[in-house]
Length: 442
Ligand SMILES: C[S@@+](CC[C@H](N)C(=O)[O-])C[C@H]1O[C@@H](n2cnc3c(N)ncnc32)[C@H](O)[C@@H]1O
Ligand code: SF4
Ligand code: SF4
Image (cartoon, rainbow, N blue to C red; front, side, top):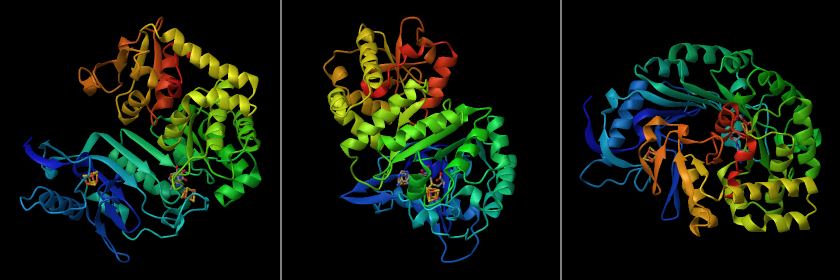
């Protein structure tokens, strides 16, 4: 394979993001002089038209030539932290690695935190299959993400899903769906372990569900999720996006009861907050932690926070116990929190393994006072990706997860997206839950 030392990024080389009327090179955002950039558009249509894959590659090539020109052109990518100078293969030798399909904004809900961009009702402006017919080189690691709009809101979803799976056989695939409509093709892909889904519920009562989701049907969504999760709960992630309408315990407690009633406690959970609101209020953070421990009490251990929420939980840090007492947290929850702190103290004798070497781990290590003050030292840093083994990460040598001693080590899982998957793996391989320290405690 011919390689050249050029400036590029993994998205320009190997990804496409399909929106209703445009094709983008990435979904990354960054700031230059206070101005937000990113979401780089390659082709935009003014109305219904055609887009070929050849045209997409040609637009990428033009952008890459400008990025690498001696004139120092200002491009949509100038200032992006993802641009790297290294030996990149020419585009025609690259294989597709990420395909994001958000080619319409039709939706059967109208969530209070969402926007016209996603539920605006724009039909696809170009034929998806015609564009994808031109894709000749697909990587073994192809990842497909289905979003929208609501993927299942279009009648052609089942046909598209089958056709694209037949053509590409992706290595991994995630469908973001509100689950108001049940899809047998999604069920089949979940049962075969060929896909994962993420669905928000965001309420414990029907009336709040209607306020937050702009639609009736909480019970229907729960019943659909129960079916989806029946064989492979590890493939289903349930989100709770905290908003001003749904953060009280009167919502959070019935939410957990509903999960139990619909046998959903073995799923993964992602606790999130409306990313359009700049701050997450302290009361909301308390409810977030309460939800974490309510789930923990029910032996639901696959619970992670999105970045936005996680930063706030870390900020509150040492005050958590005090705030809990002042806010009447139950004795059992305080006991669980104290138990997690005790786990950490017991682990301080050099038996803590950190799993994960991405941005999340970097943030975790930099923001951990215990690590900064050298009260805690890590015995190993491990990662599931073989290509990272032997590389350096923040002063540690990255090792395979086989370095974990299940009898004496404690593990901190430093990942948001793969938290549930990693904890499922550790528990199924015999690590006791007592040896997994919740990452916000570190
Ligand atoms: C725009 S939706 C489209 C897919 C599908 N309709 C759904 O709701 O899953 C994609 C994802 O964005 C999330 N999302 C949308 N607006 C958000 C916001 N303001 N804050 C946090 N997450 C948001 C949704 O929860 C969903 O997981
Ligand atoms: S903005 Fe950054 S991530 Fe997006 S295509 Fe350009 S270099 Fe890549
Ligand atoms: S279901 Fe998804 S696309 Fe529809 S309004 Fe809610 S978040 Fe937006």
